[in-house]
Length: 387
Image 1 (cartoon, one colour):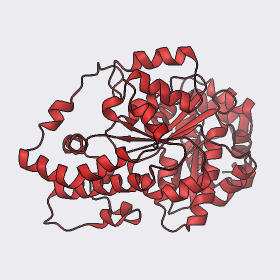
Image 2: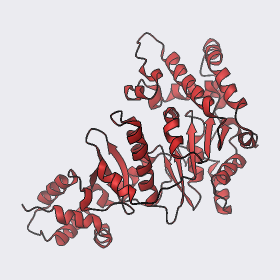
Image 3: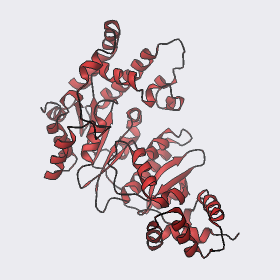
Image 4: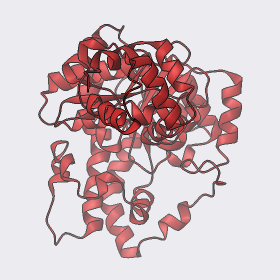
């Protein structure tokens, strides 16, 4: 079997070849298109698939320029490589990994051609782009409306929302990189993700993971002027939501231990609720320590109305009337299940714990929660007080 690496890279580089392959309606048609382009009709379908799989493992680096046409979507720390795919529209899903799944399901080519580049090559491609200044950042305690906010912002024609991007998550979790390296690659990754959509959706919004607040200094040093929303909620309600379905940071994930000592607790005899209360306490304190900074607005879940969401959109430079109408419509449905009518469950969440458990949670967390709200800058209160 010949070496088809040059043909593979030529396909990645060529908009015309990619469009030709994207017209294929079946695996057989797609492989026939590739055989024609690569002049390898003598290969059986199984042989060609095996060759493509081999090529997918080889970083293309300088042999293919992916920036602008392909979307970097996953970083593999152990191999120091980044995986790319062809975007299918913009993300409207609650989370970025769901958008990635849609891109792979809806476009057959993404299931077969899966290029990767080395981290060093990604930096070179990213450095060729102009630095992007995001329209806004969303930080949150989790389970306090961040998915609703990001979903509403994605309804604006000018917006491109990255909701808990796996690419950024894995980069910040890579403890083998220095802070300077993480900062540089974070800038590069954000530039490359934005480049795919910037011509028609220039307002880039990033919703971070709950635990990313512990990387505040690194992120803020890169983007000191970006408007930031801190989303918070009554601590009892947050913990009640994790009782039903725990998030990653509430499940003793050892990889998060590099972010904060609270994640290093592996003592078996500590009750799970106590561990989760400690995690939430650390998140509240981290937010409280920086909430009075420039361009930071604190929004409590209880005030997350359509008016507040419109105020957030305007803060991030989005103001078209159609977007506002979409917000009002979106507010009627569940943020993580868009087809499901939203029903407020705050009272039910309050009743999730015994009175003794509620007392312990409130005793530990309410001071930090109230401090966070009380010490927010005045501009933030304009959003918090919207009804």
